[in-house]
Length: 351
Ligand SMILES: C[S@@+](CC[C@H](N)C(=O)[O-])C[C@H]1O[C@@H](n2cnc3c(N)ncnc32)[C@H](O)[C@@H]1O
Ligand SMILES: [Zn+2]
Image 1 (cartoon, rainbow, N blue to C red):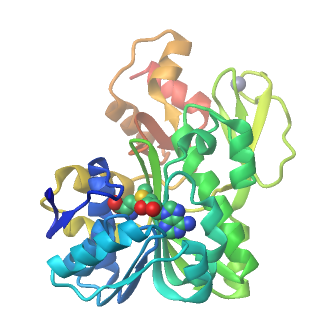
Image 2: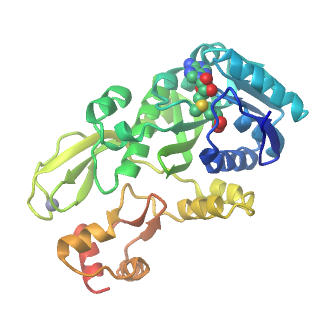
């Protein structure tokens, strides 16, 4: 027997899926569960149970259900529950069946690949919170166009900001799934790390909230020549880039609303003091300017044939000219700003 340890949990993982590289994802999940003071949480794809076990123990959530479709995984989960002296409920169901049968305050989806097949049932089941991991970044971010269209009913586009494109394609589908049930969403934290998208959403019941949410859906018109972009409410682009007159392409529908809630993130950050990478990641998310997408510093410098200066200097220059600007966790070379491509270029040339 190979006994592993993560957070406050000792567990076995032989016979079930376990990816130690997802520790950061789980660390943040536990911190968010603690920050939100959850009382009832479903880990719908438990594998060894490590995620839900940590939520039960470290975030002190009373009612934790650990589910997996694999009987072998469930046996292992039961052993891991007993080993840690916890009182979690273990179920061995297809997640879609369980989610259609029962409501949970918080539903966490961490399937293999795309969460798309489970979003309809999870939207029904989640009373207050929906946490989602998507590891199918190729379809989400535009590398596999048709697969993205099939899974997310949206057209992705591979751009400099493809990581954020993936997050907003996923959120766009969740908003539409929830709206069918007269529910809306308020994103609290969204991050794209390594090769996955992870988002933490508040779910709010009500036709009016759902209507308001749908107003956050829209499209992006992107120039493949210069990388300029602008968001548009309807998929009716001008077709011509306002910056370089090049041909533009449209992606969407996408979630164009807020994706971070700094107050909640701040509470989670205070629970991650011993975990520098998670702490830094969340602090960057909390400080991001809330505008969709970002400019890539190096791409623009390459196009202008100039030597890249310091990103901090460019951000400061944009601030001085009255623009919002920040770095972004999505990309170390990214700049989020409400400035136009022309203004960003000017800031780079004079940096
Ligand atoms: C990516 S792993 C989960 C990892 C786990 N959450 C963690 O953090 O270690 C996905 C798990 O989902 C299970 N699974 C696959 N299809 C399922 C379904 N339809 N319903 C429930 N569980 C399913 C698999 O048996 C596998 O254990
Ligand atoms: Zn252009």
